[in-house]
Length: 189
Image 1 (cartoon, rainbow, N blue to C red):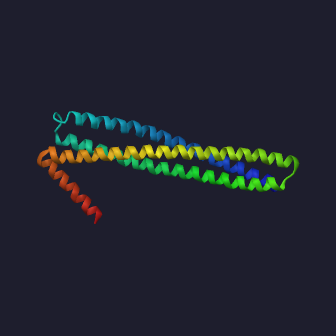
Image 2: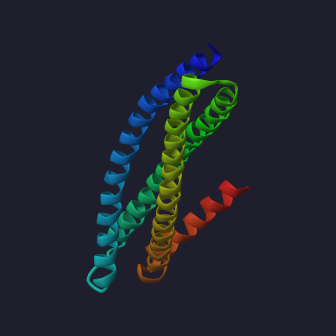
Image 3: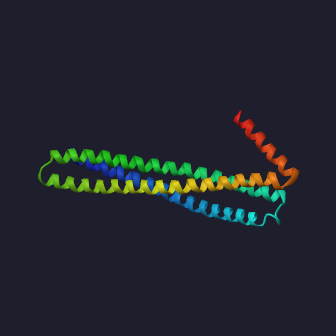
């Protein structure tokens, strides 16, 4: 009797998490693809501007590119936060499967005959789902490393733009840079 309740509870947990997981993953992947395209576009713009810096010493153009780079970095940080939520969801799912496997093992040890065989089948299904969640976590860890690399690259490009504006955009550029340093100092205080 108890093994039936455990199996029904396990199936209920799987169904509930699966719907939430699918929705969250679909939203995450759509947002991630959009942001990747936007990031690549901005990086191409930055590379083009840098390659043609002699033609493009216009202060306002560089300010806009710096700002766009800054916005991209902020969007990547937000995406990383969303990524952490997805990781937490899969981690919770994996832990729930682990707990369910433990309960099924106890039921299997107490069962006999046909019940024992049915519990073994359910146990195998739970192990498969556990391994699937584990594989998803590994994939998400790789995605996180990729996102962190992108963030580092964007932050470096933003820093280079900031220094470029200071060094090559005359008095306006130096004044703009100093105001930014002052704002940062006030935020830190």
